Length: 156
Image (cartoon, rainbow, N blue to C red; front, side, top):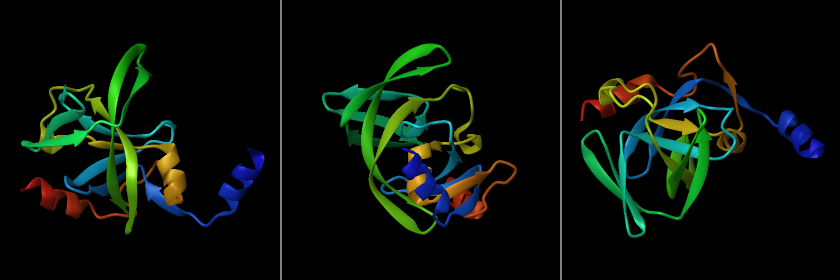
């Protein structure tokens, strides 16, 4: 474990902001919070989702998406245990595509937020950030990506 840590520290890394833009293949661009406190996996934040047989469906910007569920995970968040479906999607971030990333579907804690003003639609996990070779500067936003790309997609 110490050897892995030393290797990680010695690798070349880019400095990102706490918020960046990601592109999810088949969905589009989303604002993501880089969440080094989340070690499990990335999360896609939705207002609600429905499961039917082995698929999960949800809406983003008024469009419905449906994906096969690979597994379910149990998460304890704010003292409450929930089961979340897990799907696999390709994430494009900082010019690179990360294929078949596990992403759990999380219902927003803030159900009344207007979709165009969503704080973050995606949480990028510590594991993903290590793979992307990124360190977070919590005082900054959109250091590696352009927020304008997000705003173009929101107008669709």
